[in-house]
Image 1 (cartoon, helix red, strand yellow):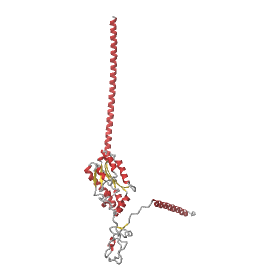
Image 2 (cartoon, helix red, strand yellow; image 1 turned 90 degrees about the vertical axis):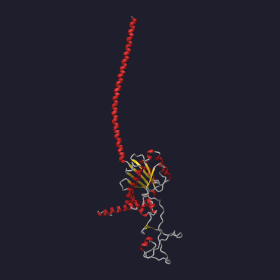
Image 3 (cartoon, rainbow, N blue to C red; image 1 turned 180 degrees about the vertical axis):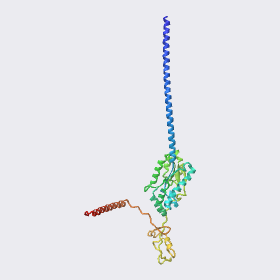
Image 4 (cartoon, rainbow, N blue to C red; image 1 turned 30 degrees about the vertical axis):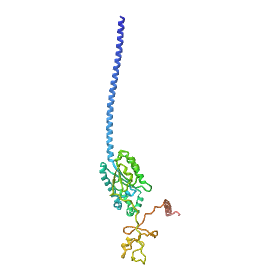
Length: 366
């Protein structure tokens, strides 16, 4: 009897343990189910939020892309501080109008070239930036015999800047390689700009930009975005670079500057010479001027002789015999300072005299 009771008691205990385990399993399952329901609800909320955020980001991305496309441009950088990128005389000799025509022609020629190599950017706006020391360039042109073009150079630059608001001819002033520094700075700033779809670099007259282009060529995304505008003289190392190149001989000079041969004034021959003297000739008139005013035989200009060339006076003249003066040297800084000092003294003196005159008008003592 006792054994049977013990077995029943043991079975009861085992049943209770199983019930407790089952109850615990049920509670755990219920809790897990509750957590799963909560997680599912949170996932739905998060999914909706992510979908909304994704739609907003896609909208912003499209807006940004549209904004980039609206602001896209082609950047043209030209080192005009050298004879390799001096415009043809047909533009320079027309002054302001020639500058406008040169800017338009440069854009049209670049568009024509880019349609063959990069047609997707050929119709974008072109930002033209030319850099030069205008005074130095004008002096070089004058020494080369381009006197009229030299005198009209600043008018040409102004006209170039008056075309559509995207064309600039920038005077970098005196200093070694100032144009190079300007162009390298602009190139570094815009090469990673997403709005700058293409860059045309006109600076191949020497190897000054090779190092910068060597760095750029290693970046695959930039290699196809740069085109070299070559001049009649091109640095040897540019042939090793993997960039496309173009040449515009119809716009720029096709030969280097050369020292011009001055016109020497024709001196009247001595009285005992066999040539006939003319009434309107004299040591101050050129050959062209005397040819237009003389009724008799023309005395031709005599070239300088090796024996007396040091004492011979040289005068430059234009095609109609008018004298051309050379460029004046820039006064030293001390002269400018002295001038402004005297000017201030005179202004102060004039102001004091004016005050005394006003006092006299009111009866005050001088």
